[in-house]
Amino acid sequence: FCALHRPQNRLTVINGCESGMIRPDRVDELVGLPSGFLYAGATCVLSTLWSVYDLSSALLVNRFHQEWLGDDPEDPHSGLSVAAALREAQRWLREDVVSGPYLQKEILPGLLEGLNSVSLRQVCERQAQLYAEKYPDTPPFAAPVHWAALVAVGLGYPLPPAAS
Image (tube, rainbow, N blue to C red; front, side):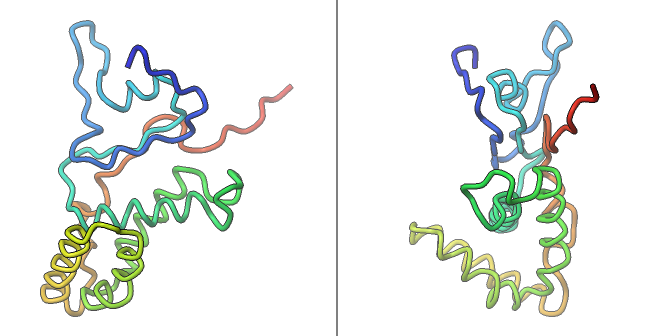
């Protein structure tokens, strides 16, 4: 990361298993991917604290981007702050995906539109089928294991103007 310099990077998303894990090094500093990207200039880093499920993680990050970007992806002020977008995406996954069949029929088609890989599409379809069978009447992603692993490190909200 010493050669990586990204001062205009408002957000780095690392949606991989345990990408947010940090370990103290020999001089008691916290070393990990999030701190490396912050050091390189990122304002905020989203990463995961434990192994994540593919489908729920993809849905969460997809919804996060919708909330963060807002109606106009070209306007950096049209969406929510990183922290608010993450909170809303987590709430959506936990509460608004009301059942496995709803996931399969209403939510999954929108996610699949953005996937070009046939094999990834098939994996998502198989997982959604399993959730539809296992959760016919209840939210399939209510458990924190599906939505709480993704965390924001750094400045996840805008700072108010300094007082003069």
